[in-house]
Image (cartoon, rainbow over all chains, first blue to last red; front, side, top):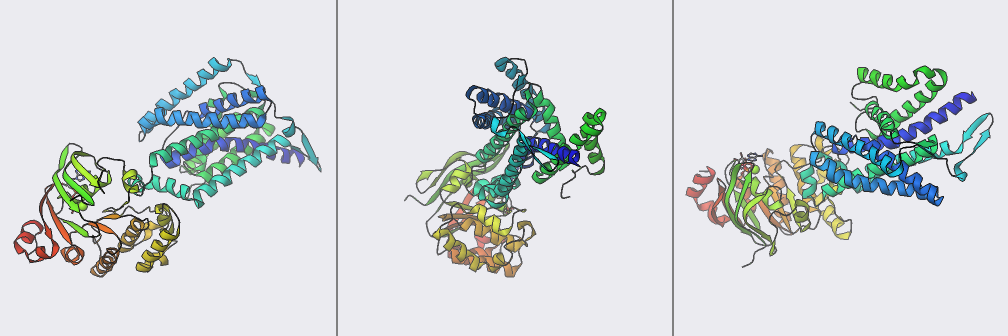
Length: 285
Length: 235
Ligand SMILES: Nc1ncnc2c1ncn2[C@@H]1O[C@H](COP(=O)(O)OP(=O)(O)OP(=O)(O)O)[C@@H](O)[C@H]1O
Ligand SMILES: [Mg+2]
């Protein structure tokens, strides 16, 4: 029982980290129809710059703020110079963003060195407590809380505010929303930046979770995020959350019970979903 | 005389085609100016050029004395010009209420008053407030599009063929509402339905093959059988 529960919390925490990364991807895809393979690059840049600040200043919160700031900035650069020229063409998007991803990854090695770095959570998030027989690890609970918080914040933003309406309307009819006085290019840029910031935040949180960062982890982890986006239904925000939790849980349980298969599991999951529900597990249609 | 909206010698291309050759007209404040002309004459393109949606390659457009030619559409809209496109431009997945909210730049006493006023004019919109815009009838979509353009304190409304595809009784309803709006704002109306146009228009311009070829007072046009026959095919 206690093992099951611990695995569930593990899985949920991993799922939330994947969700934060996938959320940006699915936002950018669902709203702007852009496939952004550079997303993993934003993830590592968030991780490295956040960890750097955290280790220089001792402030974990400072690290999170740095990661978000760097994410916003890189989002701005990516949208303006990489993605804007290729709106409307998926093939070009894949090629140019994948190229940019590699550039971001190599730049990490140049700036921060090629070796991996060890990170641990701040003292106030470290440790664990026990209820009954179950061990709760503080940092994992923290990640789960952040994930849900962000999910509901975005849900509220898109469903309840005029900003959300503008973004959705802009996707449906760009000319009309401009004719109503909205600078839709600016709005899309902001959406892109927010998606990038989520990726960077995910990187920073993941750094302290896994305890180690290295340049290639962006690509590795973003594959998980893409799997989640596909399973959840491309562009479906709620679907991404559910799929991320599903992938996180599956991974946690498989790693414990069938470790030999754990790497293949996610691909398998995606393949099964694509065969039986190619529009995604949680798509409406 | 510096007019409210002044369009002079505008030329516009769509891709490699010359669509507008020489469009000139002006819209006096407080009046309803009607653009007439047969299908494909360039009426819609003219409105789109004013809104900045179709690039203008020559000529000038001024609004309240300021040049607005080829400015970004959102900047033109924010000068106080509301646009009701030919296809109505309803956001299909948003509800009627959300379509209205997304259009409202501010929420204050004045916009609230305008909202109430326009909803009294179109009670259908109130009734279907929570229905997705895509599920409205053609007439209701038209009402929603007009309301959306009206709800901000726009000084000029560009309305493209509001009677298109509507049953006569609905046309009358829409026409009546534009008539009432006339008291509160200036309107540039594109209209094929001559009965409707002559009922609410003050001045008219006829566009033919991308050029403004005739102009005058609406009530003169009603008497001019030759002109009606020549450009509008009305006898
Ligand atoms: N996207 C486009 N590409 C090429 N030609 C176009 C395009 N849009 C319009 N045209 C052409 O421009 C000309 C003017 O079109 P416009 O829509 O302005 O006419 P209109 O007077 O509004 O006609 P209608 O009464 O049928 O709405 C037409 O000959 C049309 O075929
Ligand atoms: Mg037209």
